[in-house]
Image (cartoon, rainbow, N blue to C red):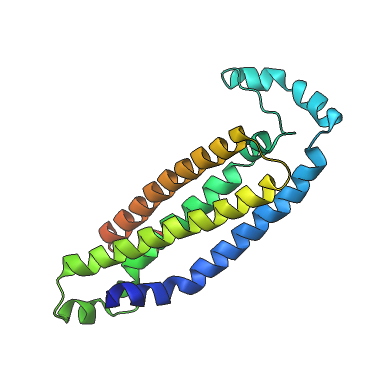
Amino acid sequence: MNIILHEIKSNLKEFIIWTVALSVLFYVASFEYETFAGSEEIAAAMESFGFFFDALAGMSIDISTPEGYLSLISIYIYLPLGIYSGLLGSNIIAKEERDKTAEYLFTLPVKREKVLLNKVITAILFTVVINIIVLTVTYFTFGQLGTSESYNVFVFNMALGVLLTQLIFLCIGMALSAVLRQYKKSGY
């Protein structure tokens, strides 16, 4: 438990910076959505891109609804949260080598497996919490503009998709930092 608390304290600053920055980004994006909501000119412009949506297996995105707009900007949700999780995974493992504390840490009367398990638990905790906070902010900023049952289902499904993407990037980051000999290359 001491290792988990130590890891939480050492990664809290980065967590707060990423959380605040992404929350502000999606809050500002909700203002942009307000200009699209109910605009007939935007709907007509999107219909002119029919050939593009036909190439996407016949999908049609109506950006005048919160679901359509969020699906359009979802790359800005998936990508930064995936990058955060990948960097967290690589830094949480490589940090001991970088700070030259690995030798000391592994001389403690704690097995290496327990140390790594506690680091993994901390990384998963941060990943789940940032996902919950950012998507809750997204839900409420776009939800205050009028919600429906389909919006609730859409945000829930998107939250699951983002969480799975984050966990994949977290595992990749941890694997790279564990395999690569030079810790600086694990974050690239």
